[in-house]
Length: 224
Ligand code: CA
Image 1 (cartoon, protein in one colour):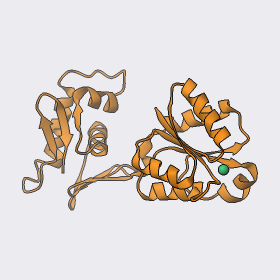
Image 2: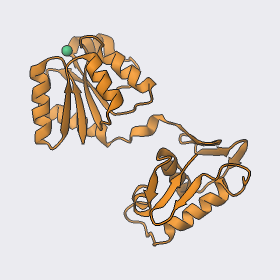
Image 3: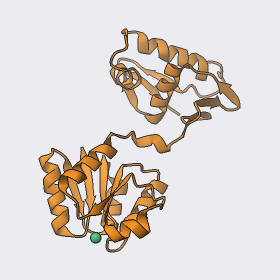
Image 4: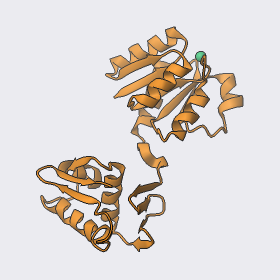
């Protein structure tokens, strides 16, 4: 897992980097707000540790700008206790957790691991492709004006395909994301469910773009 640490106090930044590397994380450091923001918005990180008081651009500003750009990388904010009280609490910045300085490294590690376990894209309630729309909060699916009724499994499969739009997904990837470990998945189960889904989101709309594609020898892809 790759973590970005944005912290202007070099001593703290280096200590966090060293500690995380011992836990087998890959760590990038940024020492100013703009540097941190540039890294966070261009590189793909699994998590960001973000100091609040930074030169050039402060942590809250970075956090808000990333969320505005639809970047939902989990963020743990570091802050002095006084700042935590009067600035951060109640502010809807889009951060996942806060940790007050000074902190023990074990505490930082535990908080970081907790936010990394959360699903990333919970914020994207509406997933779309062409005129297909899936509302993951209300379990609602529509194509244009037509409402589509899906089983729970079909819904999970469509949600997974939409979150990975334009990517080719193998049957193994689909099984591991859509079915639980203990369910009986036969070799043709994915094929079968993709077939059900096609009959509901593509086939009734022959004049529209057919979204689910079979990539022979590899798997499936949902493409606009
Ligand atoms: Ca600072």
